[in-house]
Image (cartoon, rainbow, N blue to C red; front, top):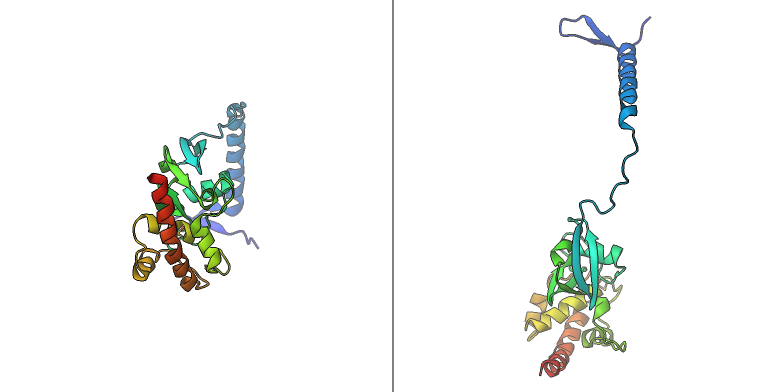
Length: 214
Ligand code: FES
Ligand code: FES
């Protein structure tokens, strides 16, 4: 009994048995391999930066010259290349705010921002907001004072969004704070503390930044 499946042509005649198919393709592979021997001359080592884009960016006051893959997100570059893991990856789709950082003073979802687009920009992350002497930023201190966190995963993004919220002039009432912080989700539900923290830090920030710009 021949149990080898047979391919049949449209007229029903055997066209190619599996055995024949395997033998012919193996022979073809041999030809290809033999032909490949000619092409197997050692090639120049691949350039690890091929296709990458030179990007100059200042992060937390420190200048960097990076060779970036054009589709790399700012969040991945910050976390994986620069070791700045404060900004968190919550959803990676612009829906939770855990990755919020500032680019030229404006808050952005770094998971949705192409890193190459920050060429020539100043990026600030949660690691860059305390004073050089280690004193916490008033917004950070206020989050601590008001126990505005539980697991803390959303907190870096909340703090960066809250600072931007005050600077934008969107922290003049509780309703306004809620609205302009609505892009930052806290799965632990620490919203009451977050609101109190922003309410208290806002006037301190205005005084501090007003004095700096006076
Ligand atoms: S990780 Fe960027 S918005 Fe959620
Ligand atoms: S403190 Fe846990 S997600 Fe906000």
